[in-house]
Length: 160
Image (cartoon, rainbow, N blue to C red; front, top):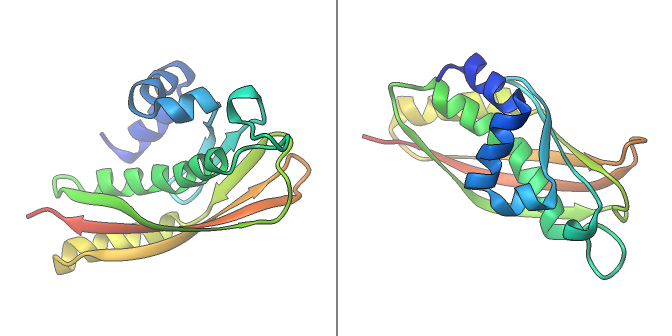
């Protein structure tokens, strides 16, 4: 599947919703969705609702983490698929989060690390060694107020 066909798949509401239900049911139930995706950036959203809430009347941190990870993971999938016919494995190896403000509405996570991810995937293919990369995903409310900043560390390794 080429980059553009994968991006079209993610942008198709029904197909990608069924994919999430099948592969990431927790994220699907929590309402995590992809709002916008390109080769270099991805925006995901998680709502504040009954299934994503905590006892403190805000979005549970794990739901925020799912949306943040998805914004980086979609970009990783794009660039790993682009490496075909080479096969590259990808795995989250670390996560760090800073919570700035209580999430009481929709939180939009943006990752602009697509170029860095592409470089890391290509380096893993060229060297045959594992490559780690940390990318940021920033969560903001609908009015642009910072909610949380996640730093997700990915490991890429070409399969021999």
